[in-house]
Length: 301
Image (tube, rainbow, N blue to C red):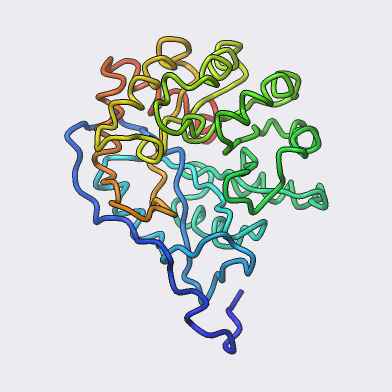
């Protein structure tokens, strides 16, 4: 895919900053550690953004992400289709191939009502193992389509990944329990400030305890009132870890799109996990064992 040469360059001028250069973390993860949430953007002359996107990120290349993995000591990753590409997976799937294909890089995609079986088969072969519903920045199906999307993906064993506010997740909890797929909650439920005391937190904990829900310990810097290690979000993370340490995964959210104030360091994000969950056996579970189970990495060796 190539961009229309008649489209002015300023249409793709970023309105948010790019990530910081990678630095080594103090915490070193176990072999096989997985970043379960990141995006790649561009190059825009090859992979143009959707015209109806909610924001315009700067380009963030596969090469830059590969350097981040090497710096932090990560061996596996899960790329998430961003809202700014809608249902056009060309950039995301090209990045997944460049990062080693399904044995090293799984994919969370986006579908719509017209997605057919052949398209789903192709996505599965490319490493897609989940579908994202994003009610925060759009770019895919909305919450009203949860049941239809779940029925579409259930035969392939995919999960449903939800980027919703904790308020909306609490409202949808009874529906989520009835869906025929596992549920993965983005960014710790996007709780906002005072996360651990949020009135929706008990509903999220109940979903977690029932064993069909996973939570990504990602995006803590988005909701926190504090700087790294985002201690207020750590309190929520410890609640989750005390409940179901076998249902937690972790992600950087690189390159941190829509971050308009001070960018987080990805080394701080990895160090925060070790601060939030200091037990080394549990951090290994979160970084290695749980992603292998959720995304099926062990199937490819």
